[in-house]
Image 1 (cartoon, rainbow, N blue to C red):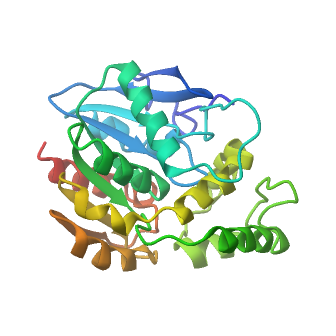
Image 2 (cartoon, one colour; image 1 turned 30 degrees about the horizontal axis):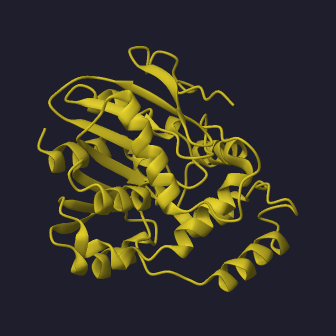
Length: 280
């Protein structure tokens, strides 16, 4: 599925280029623009797509090179064959770094929302020489759960009507998105429905990859400075204190009056937070 990055404003990203690069098992879609001494890679939420950064990309591109990437199975990043039961964090991180190799990006900063920040953490731990800085935006960096729990959760998600029997995502009520994520903007809720449809059956395997991974065990290995940003209206700020305690150089920052996805609710404030942390 081709994702229109400028779906809300056709003039917003006219100076950006998009492309696909091959990786093992499929291809990774990206959109890039801007120039500068630094490159920041933007990663979307679980069930999201690169398009959700479209309000922030033009701001950041005035100071640096910006690349928004669709993670494995999301947006325009198509994988061959059926999704597995678990799409591991290691696989998603490897796909990302392989794609960046092909694009020609060596040393980068990563800013990732939700699962994007989780993948960014894995990259920072395993490729320390390539990650300059890491910004997580509402990312649940916690411990792991076992496979049996993941299987029970998968069955419950189907029983609760969040996914059908084949694990295709079902539309979610606005009240649900407000209670879970603190979302209040109906347009953002509708876009989440569209981006989840694009990711389709890759959502649950990707979520299980997050559940299976022990982020707390790798946080002490991260050499890069880390900012754990989160929206004040969401409930993801609770993950910051225990995670930061394990980091060598980490801190937290709340973006007030924003949902778990402040890059959509408060793009200017989020962009300022990113630029300030990166020193550009």
